[in-house]
Image (cartoon, rainbow, N blue to C red):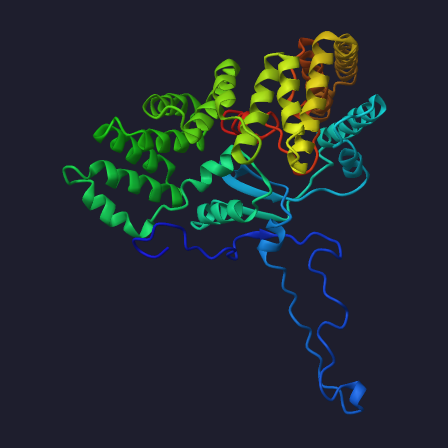
Length: 442
C-alpha cells in the first residue's frame, strides 16, 4: 500500500497463496498445438534444436473467482494455535453434485428428498471416517500481511458468490496502513488525536497479525472517544476473530446503541450472540439484517439456522423458502441444504428417527460395555496388564470412545457433522470451526 493511501494496493496473488487448478477442459486448458512448432524443427527438415518445455502457468485467479460458489473464512489449526484461512470454493462435480443440482427446483418429490437424505448419510459416514476431504481451488491465509487485501479483492471480484460474515469481517481490515504505524504511535500521544490514531494503529496491527495489540489500541480509542460507534465495531470484530465472543457481543452492543440500523453492526452482533448460543438474541439481529443478496442473504441463512436450533421448524422453513425463491442458484442450493437439515432435526426431535437412533445408541453402548468387560477379564486371565500393558489398554481406549459416542447419541445432542449436507462449497454455520472448541481448550 502506498503511504497515506485509502485502499489496498496489494498484489493479488503472492507466492504464499495456495492455488490448485481444478481438473477439466473448461478450466484454462490449452490446445495441444498452443505452443506451435519451433523454427527449423522436424517439419522443416533441419536438425531439431533441443526442445524447451514451456513452464505451465495457472490461469489468473480472477478466472476462478468468476466461477466461485462461496468464500468461506474459518480458523485452521497451525502448530499450537489457529490461523485464519479464507477458501474460495467452486461447485462440486460427480453424482452427488448432480443429485443436489436436481434438487434446486422449487418443488421436490418425496423420493428425491429421501435420496438427498441418503446421500447426506453416506457423506456424513465418510466424513466421520475422515475419508472425505475436499480441497478448495484457491486459498488465502493470514500468514501473509497481504491476506486482508486479498480477501477484500476476492470478495469484490466474486460478485455472484456466497460470502460468509467472517469473510466480510476480514475485508473490513483491508485498508490498514502498516507503513504509518510509527506515525500512529506518535499521534496517539497528542491530545485530541488519540482516538483516530489508536483506531488506525489497531487496524494496522490486525494486518500484521498482532491481534492482542490491536485490541489494546481499539480499547484505548474507545476510552478516548467512547461515543464513536466505529471504534466499538472494530473492537468487536477483532474480538470475534479471536473467538472472544462474550467481549465481542458487549462491544458490538455498544456500537448498536450508538448506530442503530447499521447492517455491519447488526451482522456482527448477531454472529457473536449465535456463537454464545443466545439464539433468540441472534434471531433478533439477523431478522433486521436479512435480505436476498450479499451478506444480507448470509444473515437470512443464519436466521434460519437460529430458528432451527430453537426448534421453530415452520418459521425456519418460511425463511428458507424466501431464500430459495431469490433466484440466485447458489443460495437456492444453500436453502435446499438447510431445508434438509431442518427436516432431519425435526424428525430427530419428534419423529421415529429419534426413537430409532436412541435404541441404536443404547444397543451400541451395551455392546461396548460388554466387549470392554470381556476384554478386561481376558486380559486379567492372560496377565496382559502386567506383561503387555499397551496391548491390554489399546482396545479399552477404542471401546471407551465408542461408548462415549453412544452415550452422546442417547442424550440426543447433535454433533457438528450432523448439520448441513456436507456438500462442497455450501456453508453450514453449525459445522464450521468457529463452533468447535479450540485445540487449547481440548
